[in-house]
Length: 145
Ligand code: FES
Image (cartoon, rainbow, N blue to C red):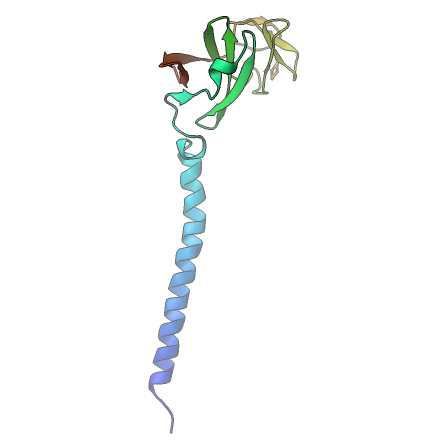
């Protein structure tokens, strides 16, 4: 004798399987989009990111940190700190700090920025964007201006 409940059980299982696979596929498509649209989820908050070990930096020394997924160079100048976006304003190459020259250098088209982020030479159309520094309780924090 044929069991009439078997097709509906099998059909129910297939419906459930299709719904589960659709949910997983949907999540796989939506979650990366949300992470892309919400940069803070990748690189942390844009406000008050601590510069780890800032007090150990010697004058003239620089350290690169991440703020909201962007590279930021923090430079210690005697007792003060300065922070700039590490992306060149020409085409976005990463700049480096040259402590012997007190300048930021872009390797892509030989641009030079002074210690205040101002363009000294090369094709960049504008200075390096500057970040705000806060010193609280012996710790150094950087935030977007
Ligand atoms: S990208 Fe820096 S000078 Fe062109």
